[in-house]
Image (cartoon, rainbow over the protein chains, first blue to last red):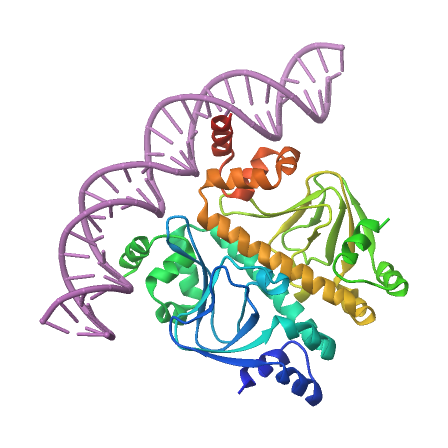
Length: 190
Length: 190
DNA sequence: CGCGACGTTGATTTGCCTCAACGATTGTGG
DNA sequence: CCACAATCGTTGAGGCAAATCAACGTCGCG
């Protein structure tokens, strides 16, 4: 059931059978319908979610009412609002399933028991966070360096299958421009 | 000498005297003149730098030759290119001192010895990375939500003393617009 | 079938950039 | 110590890329 996750962890640290068993005992499972929420604005985010299957988006609502997507997550990615998760304060974000989605998750209340029981898991999360931090810097680099059009081309080059998987207006939001403009870019690219 | 750093760590994890001693034995010290570099494009980043005193910027050079600042760091902040630091691959970034700066740092070659010797330090870094990851999300939120003008006002509200501390053209770069435009914003704000 | 969500296309507007000139300040070498 | 250059900030004119606004087409679904 959690094979995707244990395989993913094995790429960063090696757990003994015992450690793996302890780890799995801390996991919970949740199934989400399309458009279901894992977190809504104003709630505390109690879980750190690993996507076994499906796709999530993290967004906030702007002053003008538009939804601004900050992050997507697909299979083998973790998703949470760490500020809310760690400090148990209300979040300003929504986390929603774009498709039918299955997640494994760790509850904030048991996180430290898990780390104390299996220290290698704490190392695993440190490495994951390093990776995500680097990804954020790269993302800022693209935002500042590329025109909106080039940003789309670059993203398409990296994740062509993902572009097919989500509605265009969501991708436009993530990339930081309007759906109309994305439509015009695509027209030019034929 | 490293009191700023040990104090900072104490805000996240509590170390015994022995642990603190071991930790400090892994630290190195470096003094930088204004405009000195800790990292240049093409080099591998061998250190994770903690600022005892002074100010650093992390930037890359755009196609048009302009320097795009991605990050500032002042006292009590860590600065490195984690991608380069962890994977020992050449970096695409520069890390430069804006003022005369003193840093404590950990070398990538000794990082894992340190973590194995004092596991609480690994926890400390996990928490720091969580904080930085959250900060990145917040930063993206401001980039997407606010106009350049409001971004400046917001930044000024958060860090008024820091705005005085650095040249305007660097702040304009960090906020993602031109020095001329920042000048016009400031003229309007009087 | 009819409605709502999504994508496309064109006309118009606008916010910020580019370019250029100028002042003020700092630093440097004769 | 002064002359000069270089750096940094200001101001204004003009241009352009993307947003906005509006209308229309199409598909999927209740």
